[in-house]
Image 1 (cartoon, rainbow, N blue to C red):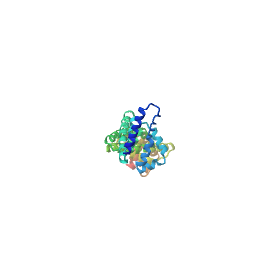
Image 2 (image 1 turned 180 degrees about the vertical axis):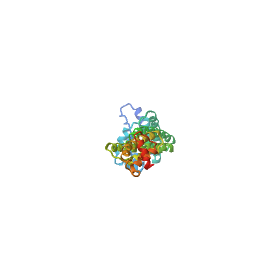
Image 3 (image 1 turned 90 degrees about the vertical axis):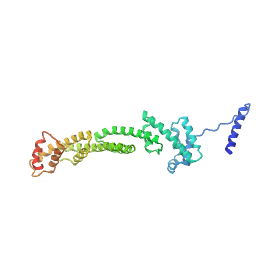
Image 4 (image 1 turned 60 degrees about the horizontal axis):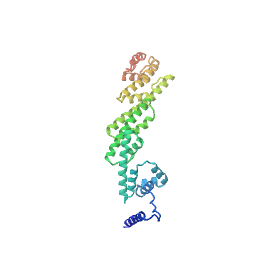
Length: 299
């Protein structure tokens, strides 16, 4: 009844102003409602304990961030309408529906143009999304992000860059949100990244051994070859040949001439080279005769 009396009084005042001769001062318009302040107050009233704790001591910052977000007039009107809902359940439902509609629009734009892609991706990853259509759109965002991440990992894998490890964690978490198949594909990519890191370590160490004349095959070479051997991709096969050439053939040409002639039994480092040559079907004009001689003790 109070609301009706206020409304009636307001309408009556408007009629008096409209019909007056202009001698009376015009009624003052009600000040516009500040949406962001209203949203802050409503969140403090209806938000979760975590939300209230997060913004309780950051009122000015929260409101400033809210005001900096671009809104179409219709969107602002709809958000304001949510704050007028009579209870918190209705308000939260209204806000969730608005958020879902906004997310769908933003995801569709990000998929078409790439606009705000990272922000939309983050919302899809962390948001409480309940709408099935919105979930499907987010899956498309995930797929696009996975494709980009996979492309960006290729040079890191090839160079053995340590940053590939952390990038792989993100890729695998993202792929898990899409499907078991995507997760399996991401796991393969990340095994290659890890093998690429080990391959670089092996190649660098083997080069340093050759440079100073260390007559050993470092254990890092063994580990790199084992990792690469487990992978079936063409990349892994090519990389295995590179590691074997440096670690086994080049170092073998340093080790075997120095050890084979005088060894009484198959010496450990010779055995490592001999077995790797046989295992990976390696051949080298300089090394082959020494492998034939080593066979007498190691074969």
